[in-house]
Amino acid sequence: MLDDLTWSGMLADPGVQAGTVAVVGAVVTRIALRPFPSWKLAGQVFFFTALTILLISHDIVPYEVGPPSGSTFERVFIALAKVVWWINAAWALIGFVRVFLIFERQPREGRLVQDLVIGLIYLGAILSVVAYVFSFPVGTLIATSGVFAIILGLALQSTLNDVFSGIALNLGRPYTIGDWIVLNDGVEGRVVETNWRSTHLLNGTNDLVILPNSFLAKVGLTNLSSPDRSHGVTLTVRVVPTTGPSAIVDVMRTVLLSSGSILTEPKPAVQVKSLNADAVEVELSFRVKDIGHAGPAKNEIFDLVYRHIKAAGLTLARPIDAAGPPDKVQSEDIVKPHRPTPLKLLDAIPLFSSLTEDEKETLAASMTRRTYKKDAILLEQGDTVASLMIVRSGALIATRKEGHKEIELGRLAPGDYFGESGLLIGVGEAASLRALTFVVVYEIAQASLTPLLHDRPGIAEELAATLSRRIETGQHSFAAEGATLNNGSMTSLVMRIRHLFQVPQ
Image (tube, rainbow, N blue to C red):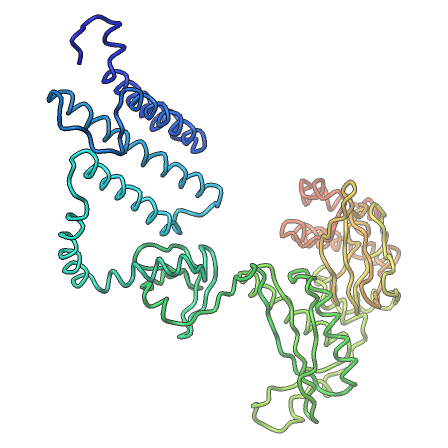
């Protein structure tokens, strides 16, 4: 070959052609198309096909042992061409695996099986080169290496146990990256990585727990993120049986309706677990989006249980194993002086925390009790409410319309209030409020607050400071001009309150 040194002769030479295709293919697929896996695969298939056609057209069959005849240069060229062909074949097959990984969207930490497949492809390519390029009997090589494999296997028995256990776990897929699992021995955490030897868990205290795959393959585990990410939670509440169990169940259902942290489907459930002279024990069951939401959801439910229990006039029962006479704790509320409901509501609202006892009593005397049936609309989006509404009992939902969609903004429970922007600065509401149950609210009209501000103008600054803090912390209820309020300074809020109530400067 290469006996004719002209350009046309060089271009027609199979060695030059095969070398050119191999070099161009490597540059295009390994460098230019590296960030684009799908296009990289297409390029690898194209150049592999071109190289195959080129070699076969020159009577070079890569998957057959070549003839021993021919010059030394020709034999070297054929050997190099076959090696390049097998390397390109391996790259093309690996390209298919990589694209499959992209379609499957498997994270890098969980590619143990895929890495095994790629390793087998490279091993097959090496054995093919040994067989078809160097004409070495692969069977003899495998038989000879078997002795070394046995010796190596005995030396690495523990490691190989972890490797094959990892393969079995990845094939069986009892968990995936991101799942939260709990082992039978109490170890739990979120799976952050699986490799050839171990699985890494990140537990609740942000510590990394490394478990050998062989251990995981033997121990029982519970996958809290399967079959989907939602997680079930159950809470037990004990209530003093001063009323019937059905009434207590209704109160607990209202508790679940008031929560914005739990899923509405499947529907939360309340079940009476036991009844005796000391307590009615009920179990609340609900689901959250992910196990990470379970803690905040429990906190919210406990808070709502307390508020609804108090609003319904019920009393929480003591634990079963509590010591002391049964009536001691339950009778503590009896010795407390009676405080009217309007005053209790004012005590619980930070907005009026700066008022004196006399001012609270004056304001409480002017409050109006209002009731709403289930599904009643308390206010429409855009309404300007010239009064503050404090929820006494029941549950409400706040929704806002954006185009053709209706978005839930939150839910209100006993002790929550709304309308402060309309009462204090005349801003309309950006949400509609609908009763989810029978609702009792107490109303503070603008006219009831005006005398207090005229008698003590400093109340305007105190109200503005509290409203400003609620806006900054995101606790402000559904104002239509939230952006305007957020950008407003304390001085501007005070000026708006004084102007609305005609308080002298």
